[in-house]
Structures are given as C-alpha cells and as structure tokens.
Length: 148
Image (cartoon, rainbow, N blue to C red; front, side):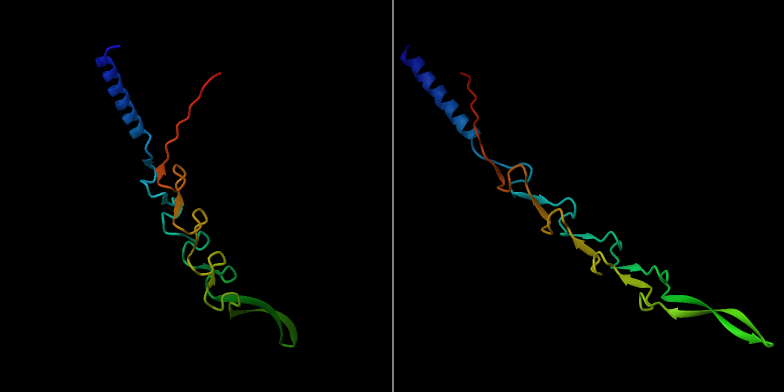
C-alpha cells in the first residue's frame, strides 16, 4: 500500500468513528420532550375527576321525597258519622326525615366534594414516560449478535 492510500484509510476510519460516536450519544426522548413524564390523559393534569354519581354537584336528589323535601303519609282514621263507625283516609304532609327537608342528600361517592381523586395518576396529574422510564433521555445501547 502506498502512503497516500494509508492516509486516506486512516482519515476515513476517523470520520467513521466520529459519526459513530455522534450516533451513540443519548438522545432526548421525543415522547415526553425530555421531561420524563407526560400529562395524565384521564384527568388532563387536573389531578381530580368530576364525580360521576352526582355529576359534580356534590349532592344527589333524595329518593324518598323525590327532591321535594316533603313526604306524605296515608293513614285511615275511624270516625263516627251519625252513630256509624266509618274509616276515612287522612293524608299528612311531613318534612322528609332522610334529607331533613332539603330534597338533597350529600353524595356518598365524593362526600360533597364534587370531584374524586384520579386513580390513573394517583392525583399527581402526570405519568412517568414509558419510553425513557422517566429519565427524559433515550440511552444508546449497542447490541451485537454473533453466530458461532
């Protein structure tokens, strides 16, 4: 080999090594943009979800009084009319004992808070990126397979 050919080979080898070293650097994770986490899709980062039982109202309508706050009782009373004993239905309106005359009951799911914790992200608002495992970078790994 001539000196020129050896010089060219060494230059090419150094250029290849340089390109290989640049390719082997850790890369910023494209999924999370290097943050290591992403916004929870379930709660959209709010950390809480609107209660599905009360639709975010904090209360439900009392089913005993249908939200009126009043219940009606019907009783038969016996009265004497012209010496004869007859029964008569008597209706009485009472304050509802379940809701204490409000027509509303505190929601049992959210305890009146109107929302509940997000179980997807454990109320953090974000999830660890699965691509980079929360590091924000993709580590370079070189896998060499060889056959015997």
